[in-house]
Image: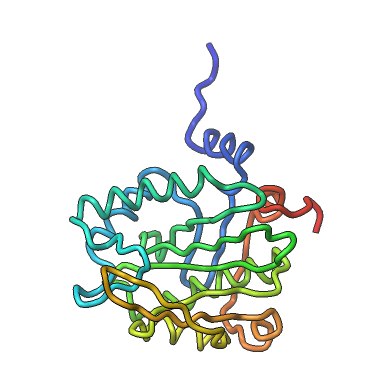
Length: 229
């Protein structure tokens, strides 16, 4: 009788075909990685419980202005869609953020034609009950380390609406500088976003969060880079 593969065997088989599953970013308090199905469900629950106050809208696409069930479902379908569209010339990693084993939010890092542009962009959200605890700084520092130390990026860009001081404060803490503004129509009204840029030099001079990464080498081809650094 053939042996039945266990969960660990199944995970390794998936890593062999899609190495991004094996990517891990670790800070003193957090782990960032792609979620397993039950963890994706937990991430959807965190979003459904609330990401911001009712008076705010920190996203260009107002995905949180739905019923809790619709918000949860959108997290799941967006995660699948993003991973399904990853190519070496256009990729996005929707990493789930864990603290003490619990799902607390999502941190993404993305790029287009990275081998040429050497620039990555980030976006994130954190469950409302986990905000104001330093998690946002560590999760952004984790992907900054991935970009600069592991992938050889020269620039990391982000943005936040002017009425989102918490996100802007994280950027300042990590050494980002203003990089112009962008104007959006969000739910029928004007929202102005501050664009931000972190250079390799500024990151080297200012980063303070200890980060370790695992499984990056196997992912290089999927991210448009040579297998050998």
